[in-house]
Figure 1: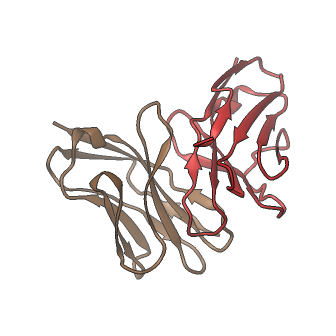
Figure 2: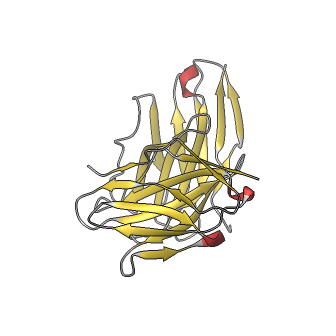
Figure 3: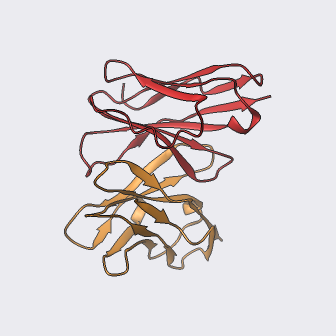
Length: 112
Length: 114
């Protein structure tokens, strides 16, 4: 069965520092991986996705993610965090069943 | 419409009552999902519709929960005999057919069972 793990409930980072939000996955077949962000009292917004090709994927708001097949990971990164990046981040995977399964979410807190 | 539309945005109901939550997907999107999110927590998968295929109901927590999709478009999630633990935000999402496409989410229905 497909699954996604986000091992950190919360990540704290100072503004201007690089950030990483971790995600690992388990699927049979080729994984299709997604990151979403949820700002307070707002719906989920799509950030980026990995389908095939270059392992480094660039998305909205300066975020990027690196697909690592050997480690079955798809960590979200940003070179310089902003206070406005503070939100709840979800990793998701879709495999041959086409069902989109989400991780438990990681709360990112960026401090001024 | 331009996005996924859910109604009502808020619903307060008494324990034991039935409720219906509605989702209007983006036009042309054949895949439709329902998820449940409790108090800013993770997204719990409930059910998935894809075109004319039989829906994947593996996430429905009990037989009090059911969903249908009429004409391959609008979907209704029904919760019978609501319980306090059903209180959550119910999110609907739709996507184009195929694994490579991202899903677009509605704003959700906040259900409170009192």
